[in-house]
Image (cartoon, one colour):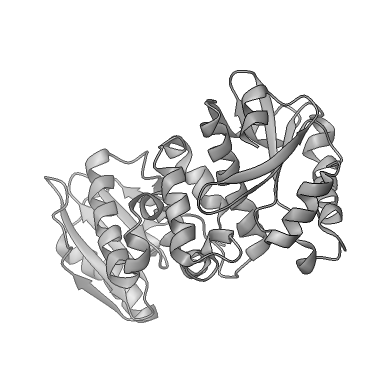
Length: 327
């Protein structure tokens, strides 16, 4: 499975003739490939071309003193041993140019998504990934970013608001990649990924600074470390009972937390578990909210978020005060 979109940097000398013979021609034999002018001028000192393939693949190539390849197609053999750089690692002028090219492409192919600037920019590494471009776009288009009974635009507007804070910008590749670069649509995993963005909103609204995806000495990675107070957070998102063998909403909640107890929560018993029930319909959540069942681990924050930003929930155990007020 291919990963998120990254540059490949070549330190060799390139010319228009070499671009044609060593990049376009091998791709042409595989997919049918054309060299085209770019929409925007590359950074000063560089020439650039788009390579468009008959199967819908796209690549960008810019060359000057060095060269940068960015594509969701098969990498030509001449570039196999080159270093991979994220958008943040590459020089800013190169990144800015490439992202303008991709966002213009997105505006043409999926204007409904491109109009949400923060969502389009943040998820660009997976929206143009080799294997995940179709599934990630379909997730926002057909599944409202994981919210049941919501429209496409309601889901997109919610995550536009979450990402507009820029709190997650420094962890863009880590967080965006969790949504997936797979050709197969895995709605359970994708909804679970968005639970981390929902939890990030709760932490931001409570005024906390936090770091996502924290590697621990135990060998586990927990979803967040909150700086003050210094607490660890693990997130889980139960599938509602209509989608799993657990027969009641409370059982679905406990079953999901049990899966974490056999892994991260056993190794880090003091971590707070955030149980995101945003996949529950109104009647399913009303049952949980009325019963307020034990999640199987304390401290715990059990909540459901709606696309208009409202949140309802309850806490168990020693949860920091600002969070108890939010839910």
